Length: 114
Image (cartoon, rainbow, N blue to C red; front, top):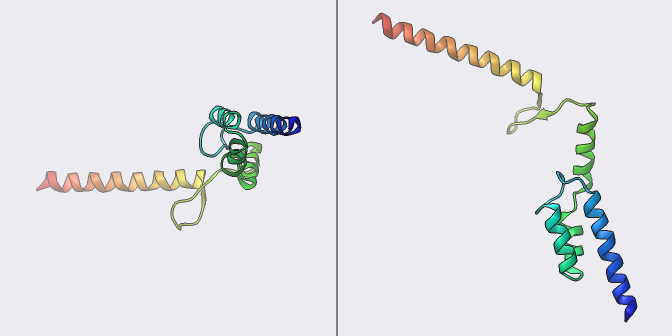
């Protein structure tokens, strides 16, 4: 029976080390301290919940590492439109803002001239 306690303690230690060394931005569900408390308080259910529900998925972790490396510009997508980089979006926004401002000036002149 003492071996069961040793195995349980080892599971808790491994899960706590995993929680501590996991990037807090990629943790799913609740914050890291709550996952640590759940893992210690709920026998065997807490560590299983961390592995199944809280731990970041592999593709999320790799995506964050690639963005931190600075090799790619962040891309924003809206709906089904193709992805544009930030510079293209800023230029498009500026052009749309200038066009809208000119349209508003034209409407104001027309109303003033009436």
